[in-house]
Image 1: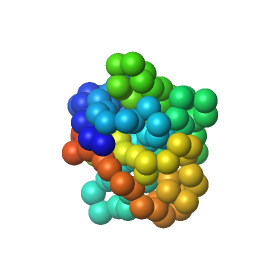
Image 2 (image 1 turned 135 degrees about the vertical axis):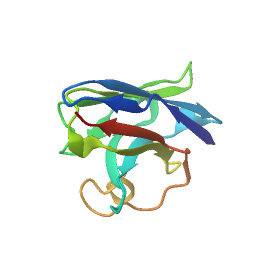
Image 3 (image 1 turned 90 degrees about the vertical axis):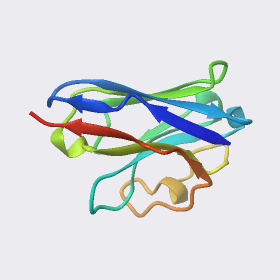
Image 4 (image 1 turned 180 degrees about the vertical axis):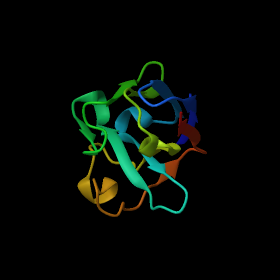
Length: 129
């Protein structure tokens, strides 16, 4: 499984960005998520979408602002980010634990994240006026 992120950039507070993650391998069988890491901080799970897209999960800090989606034909997982805040500034990674549904023990959701099996190189999002 390989994952390649794109779409990061600089935006003013209140703006929007759409991140994309192109995946390769049998990824239609796996949940895919996004996590972020700001300088000097731990990884923080942002969103996760299950195999087939039947369920999604979000960190409390992004609920109502971010939307995760997947296109298994196009082998892309996207993260639409609206109403961006300065505290959203971080490097964003897409990742998988090679499981079918989003497990709390992997993504943490406000707690320490667990083990991931694959992730991309990351894309930088900077929110600043």
